[in-house]
Length: 386
Image 1 (cartoon, helix red, strand yellow):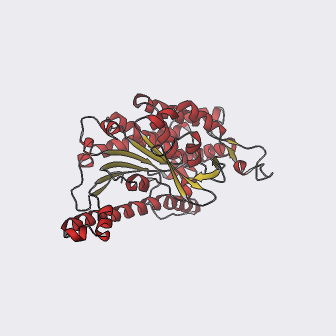
Image 2: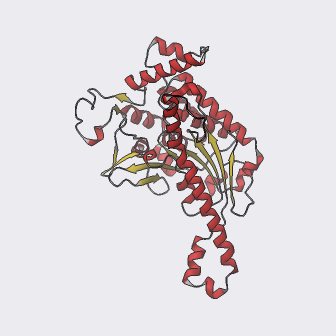
Image 3: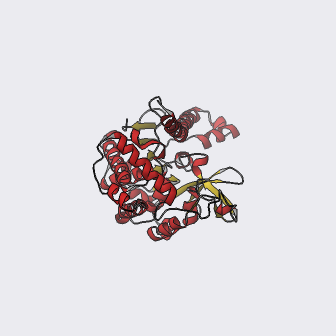
């Protein structure tokens, strides 16, 4: 890991960490927020040596790991501009042209109309509806059991990503999926196996919209079915090392009480996909406290106890690695509604991208992010996105 670590952030305090990780959650069209975050990191000279993602986060992660540093933002933008091309003709072009929307109600109506167009016609370079619909006619096989065909996405990723670079380059890639047969969460990791386009597609195979992806005789669905963040994989996989992790959440755990059925559905989705991140963070913090406590206790044990079976077990669990975890959380505007994760318009894509860039820039202005934690548990959490 020496070579990747050197390029994490040249000549800066981030060099205090062996691993600089970017952890990307699932969230469909909200994923351009993650692209904006990465652009801010790159502009600051921060180039993660480990990127991990679920669903749309897996796609963004592969675009980052599968391109040289100087091309990453360009390839991210190529992807997001491709999938946000308007499928609704002149109306879509006008909506994407940067015209001001004079009111909240009109903005909400436009977003809903645009989302309806995506649901009906698909997103260019991403997915297209199946004809005839499997709701009317039974599909021919399990891997066709979906409302949309993702062959356009396969072509797009093969065009924009160098998978040989993922498997031989300096940036580690991890993408999460769920084995349909066993129900187990699986993380495909370039440090453990060759990664190809199937693994990235599998991470985003959210039923019933998208079909399961077959890999070596097993079928996989979107990792968000079990967990919408690979944070635990990044911070809990041995060997444990000093890590600065940027966790990008596309769903906000906190929000106002809903006032109608639409707001209630929005709130449900936010809680559903963000609560797991909070749970994982709490579990990791507790495990870190235990590891540091084991280390301190083990050092004080007499020699015969240290060399006992129990003492050796304590030693295997002890660790003095430290972690800084920086949360970057997207807070959606109320006009985005329930369709915010599949409203792929150019205007909204640019709004999300800019929000991610601004949030990351704000977080990076806080110097404590780059200093190792000095508290007893060696774990610091930062959230400047409130």
